[in-house]
Length: 324
Image (tube, rainbow, N blue to C red; front, side, top):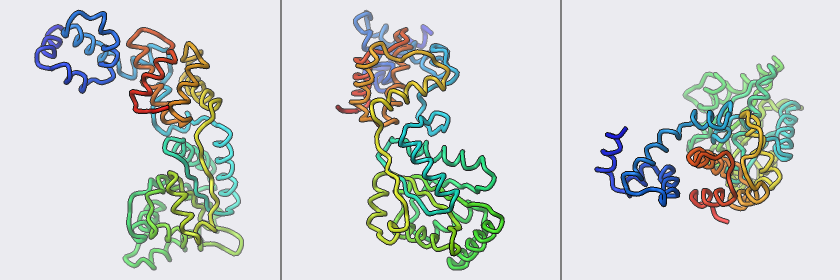
């Protein structure tokens, strides 16, 4: 260890240390008044680096797993009133084959977690044949059609028309077998006018009473704008707008994620003030709140504490370029 410290202190200037280990450097800088020289600074950086792995954080707090990883794990989806309403609407539409849906909202509002939860829940019922696509930036409807067919294991043809015919026959067969094909497309704001035209065309696959394919498009606010500009498609789809959380929902989401991870108690010393600060900087967006809490856990481990202050929340939020 001493050899490593000497090596770093010799060859790495302070600016390089700060750029290589920004989070650890932030904590070390906080402790700077207690450090006597640059070698001590490097020593502190390396010790912090060694303890910052996720397993160490889990062990320190007594978690079963890390509560603030930014991935769309459906188990960590907090069922706010708008999430419950959106899921219920999607399930109702799919079950009764009523019509396609487009769901849109700001970045970090939990749309991807929601669509993963929808996929998981519908897939538990053998009646549903659920496929999830992360929308690639394909320019042509032909390329997008081939991707959809491959996802449903339907044979593609060199001819666009022949591929459409294959898919129609597949959907008719699924209907006869009392199966409900559901196509979920995330990041749908990337879709072009041409690929949206394909979606519009696929809506024509229906019986006199029933849609043969249930479609759910999920994307950023741009998706809502694109569909509204395509009036023929907008008139046939049902919108769901996802918004940022309220302060109470944000509090409950953080508590819920801690509970799922096996933690009891609060993450904050001054709960009301800390949550208000977190809400002010994140504007109620779940993803930003989760990222702030992720860094909070690192700082708490480094400082040997179990609860954070509102001031710490503010400093980390500013460090992530979040603004009031």
